Image 1: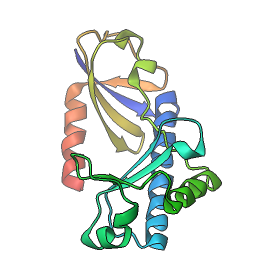
Image 2: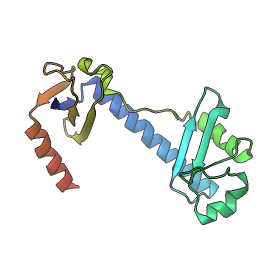
Image 3: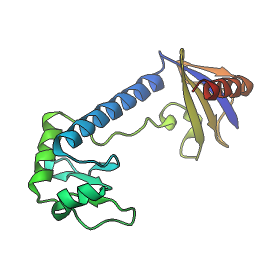
Length: 174
């Protein structure tokens, strides 16, 4: 079943989504500033954490030619995606890890899961799309198990035609 909603600003999902976007923006700004300070030209990076310790923070880049020259000795071999992580024992990575801790950068940041808001979704698969609007977000959700009466608090069920109309207007307005 395919359904559409307006996610209002009172919705818990809206609040969680805004928090997610805010953290992403803080991280992007932090990385941009750090790259400028360090002289990294690349704009493609991967920031990871796989534990609770400062030493579990990893930074990888898809280096430019200048990055290869400047940082080649402290970068690991490229992955199949051309991503090169900074060596775990390098002073550069240790300084980066410390800056992440000092600035309280939240590295593990996941988009809110709609299963936490729609009871009928449970463990089944679904697809979705959300588009910002004045009221909050327009949300399109599709799942075989989505029930007609499953409308989370702070969301308003709307006709699919209203969603698609807004989606077209949004695309044209870009």
